[in-house]
Length: 191
Ligand SMILES: [Cu+2]
Image (cartoon, rainbow, N blue to C red; front, side, top):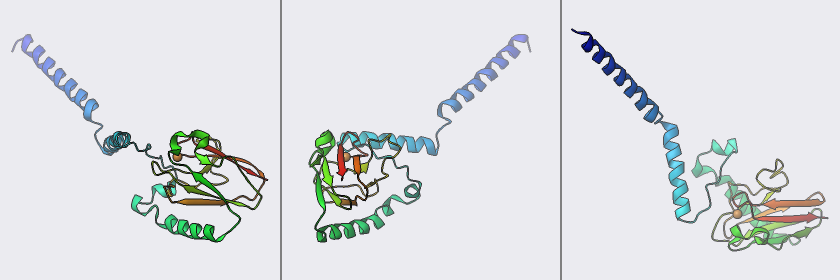
């Protein structure tokens, strides 16, 4: 066995080792993370294709632990109660989420701004069939106090025919927006 053979053997072993390392680095990350990233990517493409808003990012740990099929159950009941309560009360102010609201900025809510007396309530009615919305207090997604005064939330997205009510107990100017379309903005003035 000459020196050449040993040299070749070492070269072949080196190439084999390099191939294994390269393959491992290349496709070794296939696993649960890879699958969910692929699913998220496919969802994004499908949503764009069908003109749907981007998938809302759910951060509420309680909601994340609830299977998607059960997320709306309790809130649906709550919504029905709110809706019938709203019909019975007389002093509430109505605000519409107008058709095509997603691109209408400060015209997305009508009327806007609205004045309400301390102790008065506002009921938002969704008239838009093109996208779901939220009404969330705050100046935008990066507002640390967002949703503090009121939040219709992502678990009970407002779709055409759905309503959300809130009673204002303290005076002040309260900006609000839609979490899904943060350019949709409005203001409640409580006096
Ligand atoms: Cu919206």
